Length: 312
Image (tube, rainbow, N blue to C red):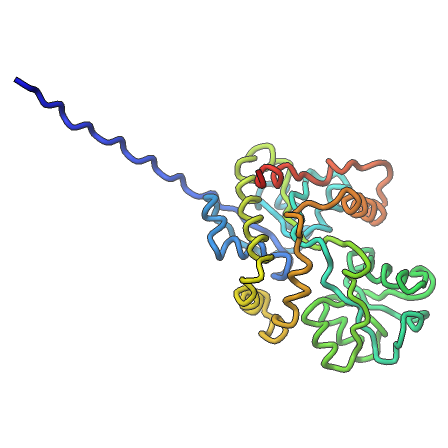
């Protein structure tokens, strides 16, 4: 008599682990945040089992919070490079914006570069990114930035634009949409900074502690961020990106559309990796700003191992 075997009981499905929650700190929502925002909106982080959020806070606060493990990541670049050069245990993991979208905007009476001699230029912060850009612009026109012009700290692009319009300064380094607003006011967009220098403006950074304790999480965050960066660089996503700049960065539709070519141009073509030359340039600037003596190896500041793994 044939016997029948009892039906095998299927193995229970493997439960999906809860997503890891991570926070990205940023000073204000802008272009540097877009790869992470796109990764959130398009589900690229969800594909990596990561639940991400953006939080706004001051740079000094976010650095302390990241080192303490209270937040996972910082969006930016300058501040983390300076912190790492000064010995804080943080790393730049990838560059999202490796070309500046800023411009030198001047009053209409400035006809050519030599007319900037003896003039005052508005910048965002002393010894920061916009001062570096202003110095490069003056050198481009054959002027000595230490002797031939004065730099005045004036806050954000909107404040600097108002100062140029009002005559308080004769020029300023501005970013979109202030550059387009300046043109509408009759001011002159004199020079695109990307035409004369490489200056990374955005990136994703984390602590040495998180790298050591959760390398799997760091890798998944970088993988999702790279997908967001690739999405931005794809021209067929233009309309969606413009809408994102309108809703998240509070640009007008007109300004976001006008800024689109320069904004997209600024995002990394090399999937987040800077050249050795540019990395050393950023370290040297940070050393000068922080009066740091001695050699600072690139490996103390930058860690591209996760980008390299994510691209395999």
